[in-house]
Length: 365
Image (tube, rainbow, N blue to C red):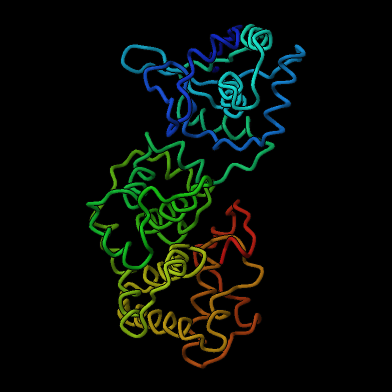
């Protein structure tokens, strides 16, 4: 079935009356009908952009529509802005004289200016994800933001969020000890959530899914099978034990470096791959990685480079396997593996290099 939409012509004063404001602002009103959807970006318009919108309104220029999804909450329609959040926020700021003071005539012109609301009637979660990507095609939408769109209806994403936010989670103390606090500590791109999804999906579904790529995880995001919390706790608990062992050799106290350990593109992804592909030898695998991490902390020559795979910028099972081999060679022979030694190092399933995420070397490492 096609998505039903409705166009409503309204005026700015009425739009502002219906607007709840942004969550966290002093004037936020949960009871209002129009909200900024959690998928929408943070307010990023600079002062000149806000002045330009005011100038366009005063001159009667066309203002693009505000595009919203609709849902029924407590028997009332709720409208959530999918595209136009910065315009909506700027309109509120204009009327509050936060862009510049308005004269009474200007305030009347602004309030009576016509604007269109486009309402998407009760779209499904999948339609919401597709629409958000297409509406924001000129702005890079991160994988983390796409995961955040599915927080309400995806068991996988819910479990990843609990890994980050649940103070009673069985792994909470280990996470704080080795990575610092993850409670309400994510950025606009939801990078912490990306890594949490990669870890949970990798623990549940195997090496192919130790990736931040939404394209690779999309079927898992839609999967409604209940999550096995015990399996995740056991698998990731074994993974985090590596850092306990590394701390017993040389403790890490730098908070910034602790936070950097949370990235699956640094060590976590390869470590989880190594543990999962060597299920009968996890003790040796954990000891190897603990001693390797200790060498990095001790600034041993070549240690940092031993976990870098040049040219393999996508987080795939094959990349993780190459990192594992490089680290093993460094630990066994105290040297950096040559590229030729990694040429035939491919994950057995042979299906992982279709990962459609594209990251710079900085993002990976």
